[in-house]
Length: 325
Image (cartoon, rainbow, N blue to C red; front, side):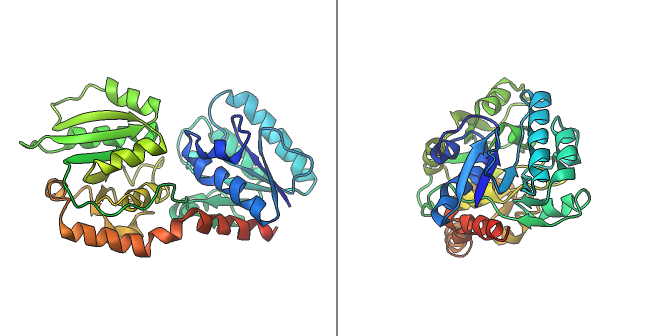
């Protein structure tokens, strides 16, 4: 079986996919490219579909040169469809649910798609309004080591994420109650995210001393080691974000950090292990993050939840899916 991943950008190896700035490339394409060949399949990736392909998997087309790229991708997929090659869509953001530059592409692509994979149950539910065929759920894998829960207090707070999440961080900082305590906030994001935050003019003086770090796995891990807690503000009612995977929460818990987060649909089943960011007691939670109660909950999460998201476990789900076709 040969699986081709239709993907933007130039990647020569699965190792290059693993260090992409795009999370969906690291979490999805890189896992497939690394693990499927270990089980007898061949994998290729790029914007040209080989004739030998049995399965085509496409995901985020991106907005760069989208009109030209959309035509190229759709024509190739239509040609493959005529040869009975199975077309899979890995749908990680709900571009059909809001005004998006990529929306028209997905509307066209759905007409020739055989199956869809999403990273969350809620995104699957949202897609039921657009797609009548089978939809599978495969979560995003963990990409950080599992670190022991924090014992010593450093007074650091961690936020990490893509530029598309920065607006929720800004809203959180704008709305945070006035206190005498000044928190140290470490922000790990891509260049676009850091630029948005750096150029934002806050309406009031915020109670945070902010340190900006360009995203890399190494930077994230090092930032977690000097942080007491992680915050994940968002908006569960925003169609752009309501279908997100549980990855940021799982990553935070794996890094040993007490976590204060929006209760997103994909987070709800893990609500025992994090704290509601909209609670009136969020300030007290952030101030007392090094308590033994927090450490106990994180240890429990690392034993019961984290193993389900290890790369080899998630890879097996992709292997089992494709071998049936």
